[in-house]
Length: 196
View 1 (tube, rainbow, N blue to C red):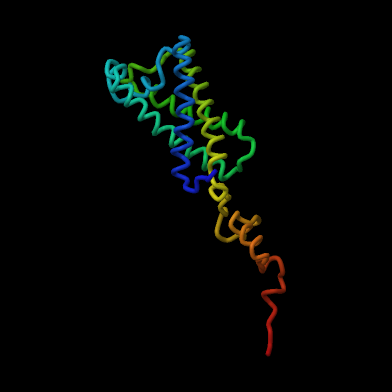
View 2 (spheres, one colour):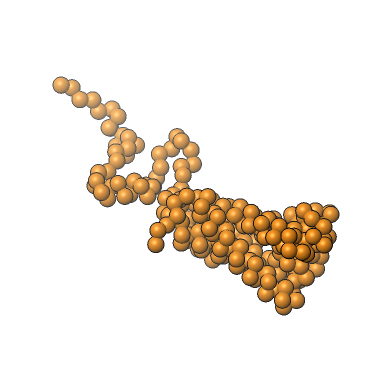
């Protein structure tokens, strides 16, 4: 399978995969009467009245707003994985889902004019669980669909030489079998002069 090499495209794809999981979990929670408001209604309530948030246009607005937040969340997840690696995906997915979900849930709740925000603990716990599902799906899809070069760790500054080779350097060294020479590996290299 061809891997995605563009970070923004990967954010969109993994964000949408995570959003599908979030909406399915949220829908199941609402049908089981655990949650009193759907995630999309709470998101739409930030922008429109209660009546508007409950009709079809309001629902569409809520889905669009959730999509935007999901893409931002996936972008955050990809950035964190490029800094910390693609191991321990379950713990990284749960943590990312909870952290980003807490922010996404707090935004509608902080808007004083939002009449659609849920005030009960069960609804908010349902949102937390939905965000965990989002975090897991977005993390796994980004790790599996993203190209290796997206996750190479960039150097912390421009003054220190890298201690690890990037994916491209590894590929080139396998093809050419030529090892790079660094002056800090052989300190005599800079002082050596050749006379003819």
